[in-house]
Length: 187
Image (cartoon, rainbow, N blue to C red; front, side, top):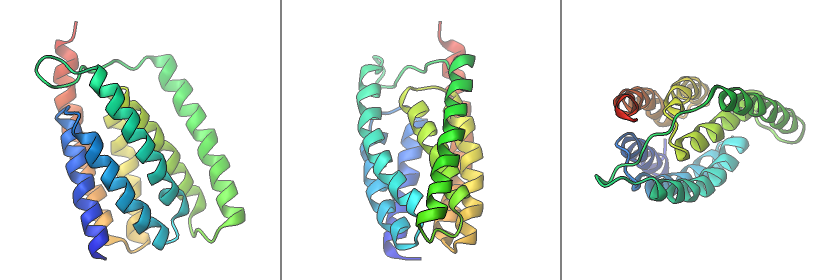
């Protein structure tokens, strides 16, 4: 447990909390967290998760752009609905991508858990895309991903990060709840 891991954890928690409150400020904070966690994961040989942080950095810029276009008069973003077609298409593509990445990692790296690392990374990318697109369903996906990540990080002895991802489960449940009320009031 390093000072860098602590700083990354605080930035990540703040970013998720800001996301639940539907403020565009979540994206710059998430960009910072991505840079910090990229270093933490690379140092622990979780290569897919380290690379994922680079993708998250790009997606933070995309999310900022998307959310700036969806800001309402009250300063919060509008919530969009996920169609059944998009749900099945996106989760299917993500499963295939995660498996392909996992097999590649198994063959070319010393990643101790390549399929878990890659699968969680792939679904995290999907979660970030759904968050950028303001789908309420992103929170359900984040709950599942965060539970599984917490278990992975305990196995990798990244205890601060495991606690963070356990807290993310609570923040994601809160985001689901908060966004539910917004969707219910949407026309």
